[in-house]
Length: 109
Length: 115
Image (tube, rainbow over all chains, first blue to last red; front, side, top):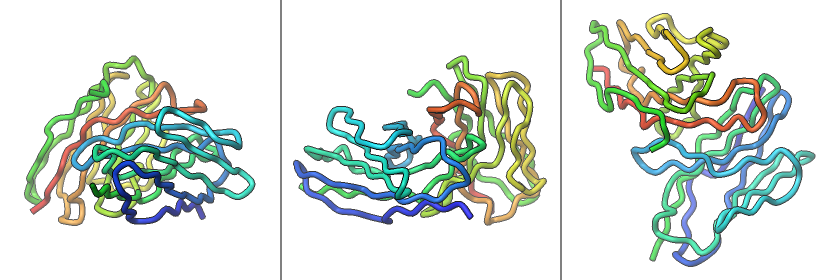
């Protein structure tokens, strides 16, 4: 079956670094997405990885290992506004997104 | 503002009511999606439309009926819903359903409560 696993909740301190892990099992693979969703708002696109390695975009980076079925989202210099849910999604062979349940990130001052 | 709008933002309906959710995208995309989001659960894909034709229907109960009159508009018609259908219903669009890096743009959602 198809499955995406990510932690339910994480807590970090303002100014620190946090890594949110995601493991995936899908029928085929056409890339790994990360989205951010603030409470009561729409998910917004953060990153896309289809090749192994690290993609850096400002304070956010995303890593992919296809052989391990593993990705992580790295957030640096955390700000209070980064408090949100982070959704991991794998695109399967039919180009459909298979979603994780999301990781709620709580930032403390 | 993502370029995808949804109305209404909140809806309370009884189990015998009929209502419709509306989605409009201003991005020139060819694919549109309906998702159901329940608390602490993964996004559930309900329907996919590509160029106004339904591509995917993930075994959704018939009390949910989609309509896509053109590539910019998508509706979800609701009738005889159950309390367990209470959730956030999200609309999304993308360039196409069969493209790599098929980044999806989401609307703000309709918070539906079935009483």
